[in-house]
Image (tube, rainbow, N blue to C red):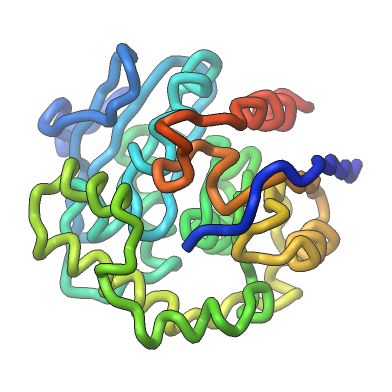
Length: 293
C-alpha cells in the first residue's frame, strides 16, 4: 500500500552482535552520541579495514552516511533515538572518517559490496537500512546486487538519475575546492582522523565519484523489491518531482516530503542552528515505517 505524507515548508533555502576473530573491537574513538554504550572496531572487507560502531539491541538497522561525512556528522544526533528500539550498526565507507583509503576508486557498487562483507563478518544475515544522500546511492547498489540482505530500505535525499538534480549542482564539481566544504564536515573528519591529507583525499574521492555519476535506469529502480521509504525535502538536492518518480517506480514504496534543507531532518551537523536539531519528529516517521508489517 503506497502512502504519501506531506509537510508544510518551514525553513529557508538549501545550503551548500557476535564478531569473527578478524574483527577487532574497541580500537578507535566512538561517535559523540551522549552516554550510549558503543561497540566499535575495524573489520577486514575486500582489502579495506572498515570502521564500524554498534549501539543498542534488537533488530539490526544499518546506517550509511553521506558523502564527505562520518558516522557522527550524519547520524550523531539521531542514533540515540534509534538505538532505543534497534541494534544500530553504522560504518564509515572507504576514505571517510576512521576508514582508510585503498588503491581503487570510490564507487557506490564497491561500497555496497564492502557493506555486504561487513555484515558477513558481523554475522548479520539481514537488516533494515537507512542511507542518506550518497549513502542512499550505496543502498540502491546493495538492493540491486545483494537484495537478500535487506528487510526494509530507507532512501533519504537521493537521486537515481542526473536529471534529478539541477545542472548547477553537477557543474559545481568542475570547480570544487576543499575550502568550499562546510566547516562542520571538515571538523568532523579531523575529529575522526586528524589528517589534513586524509581530508583532502576524501574530498577528491567524493568529487570524482560525483563527476562520474551515471545513475540507474527506470528498470533497475523498478526491480527493487524490498519495502522502501523514500524521503526528500522541499529544498533538497533532488527535486520533489524526482523523489515522486522514484516512489512511483519502486513497487512497494512510501514517500515522505519534509520541510527544509538537505539533511536537516536527520540532524546532520552542517544543518544545525546553534547546535540544535529541530526536526526530531523524523524519528517517529522512521519508526512507523520500520514497525509496519
